[in-house]
Amino acid sequence: MIDNKKILAIIPARGGSKRLPRKNILNLAGKPLIAWTIEAALGSKYIDDVIVSTDDNEISTVAKKYGAKVPFIRPDKFSSNHASSISVVLHAIEFFQKADERYDYVVLLQPTSPLRTVKNIDESIELLQQKKCDAIVSVCNVDHSPLWCNTIPSSGSLSNFLDNQVLNSRSQDLESYYRLNGAIYLCKIERILNEKTFFIQDNIYSYKMNRESSIDIDEMIDFNIAKMLMSNRCREVKTTRDLYV
Image 1 (tube, helix red, strand yellow):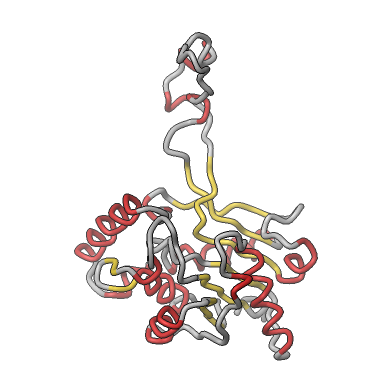
Image 2 (cartoon, rainbow, N blue to C red; image 1 turned 90 degrees about the horizontal axis):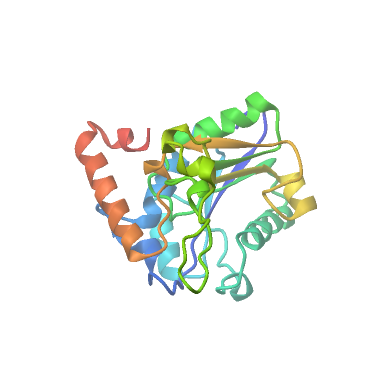
């Protein structure tokens, strides 16, 4: 809790996944993938409750084992390939409202960002307080500047592919660009209910994360990179808690 406001963490984890089957419970450095996000959320000094929204009984069992609450099994209409994250969040908020359980803010923590830490979560919440804003969304630097990108015609020609000013500039001299990294979405519940999005029209700020902590697992190559990075992190820390700092 911060400023006497209650914060609900929602971890969405459906059972189906076409690109990487059962990814939410794949073993990553000794734990199911989802466990890393559950334990990071539970370690936050500001989050009041951590729930997992899932349509899958096995994921539900794993989530409870690692300390998360699973207050419901998500309906099928919110679990298809076409279901949006915001629909999952709205379903959870409405579930608690019907149970007369009220929260002021919600933070969406996707299990596919296992290297996101307690520090990242708490800093994003503290930034919300510092900025006196209604929403925070995490971002990271892009690997390569979009100024180095363009479309290519069917002929494959590179004529006029890049602007001369860009061609004559060093990459480190180009303006910094950022992308959404999918790790943290934090918003005032009142705004989400009104606008049906985390990307509200105003009073929203970015929380910058490094690229290592921003790994987002979608395919096997992402999983293998995350496994390597997490294994390295596990070898370097002195205590289990240090993994999340």
